[in-house]
Image (spheres, rainbow, N blue to C red):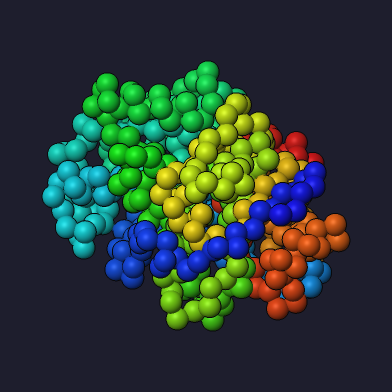
Length: 394
């Protein structure tokens, strides 16, 4: 374990293959079903997989690949992959449609049967916007609750898709509880990207929706297989989905996998540090500029996967995210410029800091980062709060 002001890293010496963690959410059939559904969405196109070759040379590693989710539909973030697939599964179950027939066209052919339904969620921004977008596409209603401190820009972006949205006077985790309460009171359908006892099915569908990220990557660069993967972690659904999907390729070497959190909300890091095998809640206001990672309690499903299979749990100061935003926005040589928000850029900022700053040599060596490393990172959002993006990058 290594500590300093900007980065904390906790290694998991008992990390095992995903198969041994006792919870399987992925196989080839599921991944194909997810991809088929997403391809049926209007305007679908794979987001870019960018090779930052000049940055890789500068940092003395073999490759750095960035999946640029700022170009996911018009939503500027990856979250719609999970929200749309989960919502589609709710509707297919409501209609009695077989999984193999799950497409946008099949569902919309019977829109009159479900247009009265209302979906509700709590969000720091991107997930709520995705739920609002998907509900509008399906012709349903959406209600979105946001935690204290949410930006007006993110609220407005959700309302643009016809959702009833408001900011509550509580933190993210309490917003989730409020959304659950309202769902029960009004017979609404909760579409939440975190799981807890008794609420697992929809969060699993959301996680499965994220499989399209790796499916696209393998189509875009079939000969590339990473040695290292760094994934941002709020409640953990994205990171767990990527880890599960990667480990389903049993014929390929297992990459070194690290979760990346904000110092203000390190629920996985703290839970692993406690060491009793259980997820633990970070209380308080969860102060961080990384709004998408400001979550105090791990998803139980994600915890089961990540606690067993992730090699490292890393917590970062906000300055690491700022560094990543500036590097992606001001690339070396002819590397592609990427507009990445606070939550989207933290993993790149982390990798840059570990490789460039000798103060982190111990972490770098423990992660086996060297000249042969092929690093995969997900820029999970663009400038979802444009004013704040400019304040940081300028």
